[in-house]
Image 1 (cartoon, protein in one colour):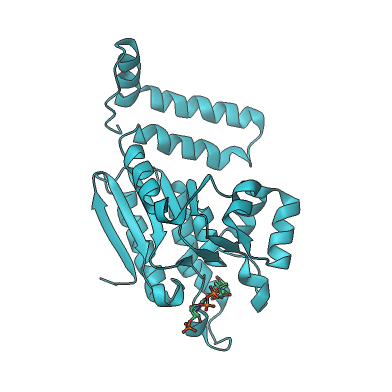
Image 2 (tube, protein in one colour):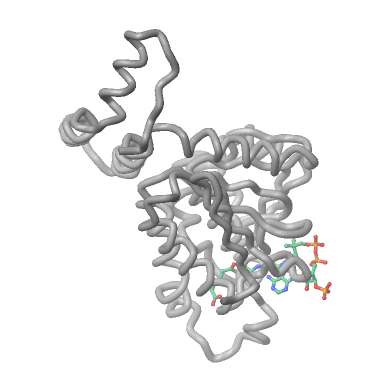
Amino acid sequence: MSETVLHEVADGVATITLNRPEVLNAQNAELMDALRDSMLAVESDPAVRAVLLTGAGRGFSAGADLAARGSGGTTDPGETLRRRYHPLIECMRRMPKPIVTAVNGVAAGAGMSLALAGDIVLAGESATFLQAFSKIGLVPDAGSTYFLPRLVGDVRARALAILADRISAAEAERFGMVWKVYPDERLIDEARSLAGHLAKMPTRAYGLIKVALNSSSDNSLSDQLELEAVLQSEAGQGEDFREGVAAFLEKRAPRFTGR
Ligand code: T3D
């Protein structure tokens, strides 16, 4: 078991912590393999109904480990992406339960891509975001060219990718990349509290919401309306739908089981 990623499950929440604080959680092969294995494990674990992803120390993640790569190295970065990053990012997007990313410091390069792959992105007020790729002669990867234009629009996505300016959490929130910014000392408690709340909510419906939203920007209106109907048929057969309606009619709090 690698120490580069901490994985703990309690009360329906899997907390995954990137754990190479001495290098701002830069992503070497060991960390990426451990992170992928953690995400795949929670995807199929019925005891997990929400995921919290954060970083140890003063950074969220500084992206790919450049020291491991040395002065360019012989490894084709495209192959590294296909082998290590794509299975992870795709797993996060299809994960049938919500992922909260708590960005506790700098999120650079593929570290920023990882942060944006979450469903609800929270940040500490001293967190920063940086499309570091072009500074070292690379192109944004690990989903950044997919997530960024959809989140912030084409004008900002281009400027962020080309200029590679380091932006603050407040700017990231203003641009629509971050849901909420908290004082640094409150971030992890707020993130835990949110993930704990989500773990008691209708997990199956959340998974279906993700399916709908993941398809939205590539679908026509007709296709999206039909997809909503298909997903609603599925949600409508769920125990949580029956419980939600019963709780409303009985004027009490619902007790969702996630089924
Ligand atoms: O093949 C493939 O892997 C393809 C995939 C590519 C995806 C990518 O992510 S490419 C982009 C890689 N990331 C970067 O280019 C960012 C490099 N880091 C920085 O620009 C800065 O460190 C930060 C802006 C992120 C933070 O700056 P600052 O001043 O807060 O911290 P620092 O002093 O630069 O870093 C602290 C330590 O972490 C330092 O180590 P030291 O000197 O104390 O021993 C530094 O070397 C180390 N560190 C930071 N980033 C990385 C790193 N070590 C290895 N790889 C890093 N990416």
